Amino acid sequence: MNWVDWFPIVFFPLKIIVLGVGMFFSIKWHHDQAKKEKEDKAN
Image (cartoon, rainbow, N blue to C red; front, side, top):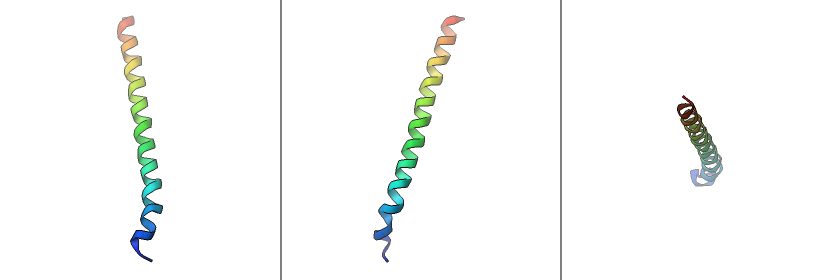
């Protein structure tokens, strides 16, 4: 069995996981920034 055969099997789930984690932290960061901005306006 060649590495080309199992490359997509390993690469695509890994890519989906990495992108998912990246999106999660991106959304979390924007949410936290919005919350911080709201608190700054309140003070």
